Image 1 (cartoon, rainbow, N blue to C red):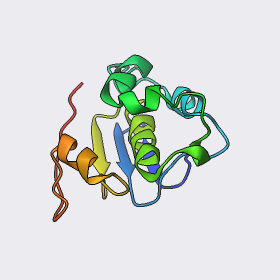
Image 2 (cartoon, rainbow, N blue to C red):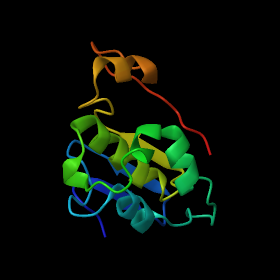
Image 3 (cartoon, rainbow, N blue to C red):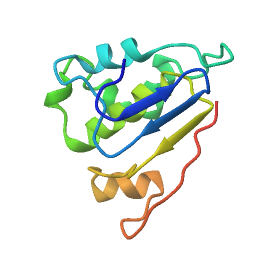
Length: 122
C-alpha cells in the first residue's frame, strides 16, 4: 500500500519519495510510522521507530498529532521517516527540503539555492 507519492519496491529494496508527501492525514505521526515498518529486502531492520525519532526529534514532539495537523516541514520529515521505516537499500528523495524552514535546511546541510545530497546509512 502506498500513500501519495512514497513508492517502495520491496523486492528491489528501493524507495522513492517524490514531490507530494506520502502520509495518511487522518493517522497520527506514530501510526503513520508504525504502519510503514517492515524488514528490508534482505531482512535487515536497521531503521527502527527509535532511530527515526533520533533522526527527526521534532516528530517525537508530535507523535499523537494527525498528519494533517503538521506543518509542511514536519510532513516532509514524516514522509522520509515512513520511507526509512521500510529499511530500503536505496532511498531517492525528490525535493527533500521542500517545506523546511531555512534554519532547518541549514541544519540538514541543504542549500536554499540548489539541491543537496545527504546519505543516511544503515
